[in-house]
Length: 236
Image 1: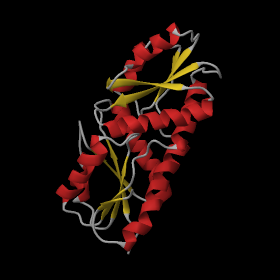
Image 2: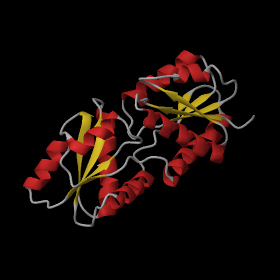
Image 3: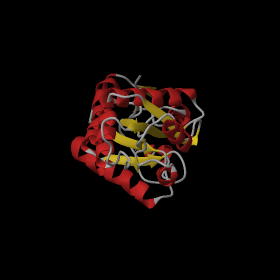
Image 4: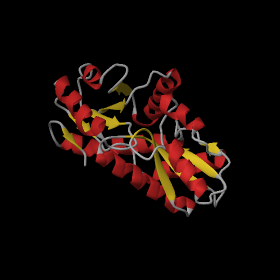
């Protein structure tokens, strides 16, 4: 059996810089594991089912999401089923993961954060409680590295919203508040953070060595199971 192909599945955005970032991430991952295809579950194409129909051999599908909500639990498996492809293994999403927490600390330092400054982890948000739980796990991982409690705020779905959290921290005496963007790429959600009233906002996680390594780890962890079994199943 040949090595499986890797399909990186992202949400999708109308922002060309966000689309370009996913393309760069796939290119970087290709240098580690071989040819990597890209698909999107929303906003733009190609869809995962369209790409899977073009791949004859086994596939490891890596959801490029920072939390496992409806897209990961429902949309991705449905797309795989719709494709009719019989040799696909879906890995866990990218986040939460300690590697991402380390990138967030790096981004905070780049934005001017200093130990003692308050931190808000800004996530897109979700109506799925599993995704919200994942975001709080990510905040706990960041708290362990910054040695202070990291608050959580949401950009689009869920409460509290990021500006509200920033304001509450100031009311409780925080002199400086920084927003850690828990987003992979630039886009509408990230652009909203500039108006949150913080002293600094980090860049998105982007294409960094730890993120590339994380995608590669998801792939290599799935390969043995895919080679040993037939059919479609999630790697949990």
